Amino acid sequence: MWYARFSVGCHLKLRDIALQGSNVEYRRENGMVTMKLRHPYTTASIWSSGRITCTGATSESMAKVAARRYARCLGKLGFPTRFLNFRIVNVLGTCSMPWAIKIVNFSERHRENASYEPELHPGVTYKMRDPDPKATLKIFSTGSVTVTAASVNHVESAIQHIYPLVFDFRKQRSAEELQHLRQKQRLQGGASAATSSVASQAAHLGNPLKTAALANARMVGAKVTTSTRNSIIVQQPQRIHMQQQHQQEQQQQQFSPSEFDVDDLIEEEENNELDMPF
Amino acid sequence: MASTSRLDNNKVCCYAHPESPLIEDYRAGDMICSECGLVVGDRVIDVGSEWRTFSNEKSGVDPSRVGGPENPLLSGGDLSTIIGPGTGSASFDAFGAPKYQNRRTMSSSDRSLISAFKEISSMADRINLPKTIVDRANNLFKQVHDGKNLKGRSNDAKASACLYIACRQEGVPRTFKEICAVSKISKKEIGRCFKLTLKALETSVDLITTADFMCRFCANLDLPNMVQRAATHIAKKAVEMDIVPGRSPISVAAAAIYMASQASEHKRSQKEIGDIAGVADVTIRQSYKLMYPHAAKLFPEHFEFTTPIDQLPQM
Image (cartoon, rainbow over all chains, first blue to last red; front, side, top):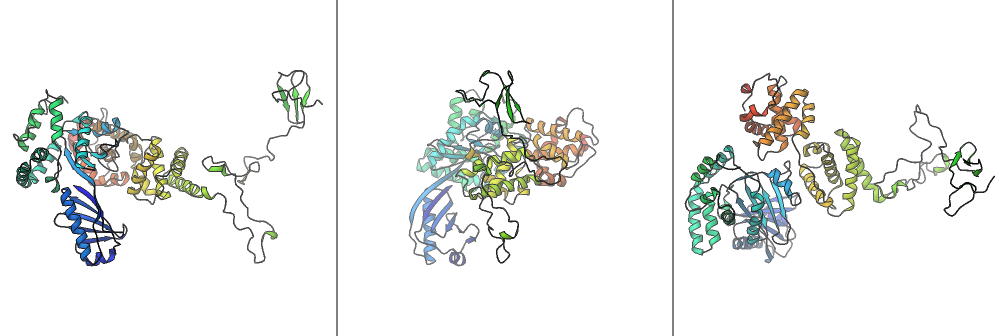
């Protein structure tokens, strides 16, 4: 998901927008109006200074289209709007490791970068502070990782960086977690037909990363929401790592996306529970 | 009477016996050489107290002391001058109002510090925290107050966050909800200030464990020592066996207390435990469901079961 920011270059009267606009919400304590657009499905926060923040878009171009639509919408309400300073601030990507993660031990080892407060948030917040990539990752005990960074390349390099660190703290998924994942995949079963069509479209465009990632999207046990169907789930680098580092492990062979279906994968995981070294 | 002979190191001593120690005679105010008895220093000022104080004196005022104890956290050490309330008729002007009303310009830069210290102290008093934690919290507040990354936050939020960190650092953590209960700041704001404070002070705190809270929760629920020890054991085992991944230690502790109390004769309902621990009873139910299948391995060896394991409630 892309998070973009731009300005319309004039002062806005939030009350008028709130009263006349459609699909808007006015929160006085925050001092902003929230407007949602159906297509592309995005949410914008509008401040009276004219600054607008647009979130939820599924690609950079869509973010720009949505931003222009918002500016147009505000223009129609009678404000002299212009389209200024559009920039993409953040990209959110999600990724799911095929194993669970021991977050307590992980957070103890990486104390300077990671912060885990179970009372506040169930995930570890790992901030990467090197100038490149500058990213914030949230790591959950189920194995999902969400990355917020300045661009898609940053997201990829962040995941490449975090993979070996998290690999040390992997653990076997328990039976309940596998059940959970199965349920989720059943719910998303309708979506998988659409995913494969998107995958074939992406193949047309010839972008190898997108193809593999979207094809992987079917088999990944991620927390799939409607937007991640199209967003880039960066599974690819993880596969590369596994091939390079762990030739002996049985798991590695299973992860060629074209051959195996989700349910087969889960059954194989279950069968291998006893054989796993950890 | 000898004059005070000052040698090169400016110490008073007898000129005949420079190395001999001097004895102070308080009654006469003399310093006498111990070797030859020469009176070396005379009219030594007595630095003892001017008034005598007795232990059964009811008045709180100690005439030997001027002002309250020095607070090293305040800049200037509280040495400023205060204009006191007037006595006698000359201090009142024609209308009967006291002249020199303004006694409050004592330390303008420290005023917010002092009010924050008072706030920390009153919050700590409500949950019965000892003075060491209050002092530590005051120290943290002073460090944070001077810095610039928490500048925009309200003083009460900073005070609550400092109190939370002080409890953690002393090894007796309080949950955010407990601090919320004695403060008027929301949990979200305290959490934000907490993270900012850790960043500002560049420290980190240890992770909370289930054992930290057992004592308090069990005591609040009136559970005997046997049950408390069993609950501690259950929670520790559950975390070691990792059957409750991703659950907050508070929820695991609450579920462990539920299991232990249901197995003994002092049964407590999930709602009661949820009230004390500050977790919702559905959360306790979730964690309990994860722990129930492994109940036999979780209990300690010499536990007397009033209700055996297979009759434990299964929700």
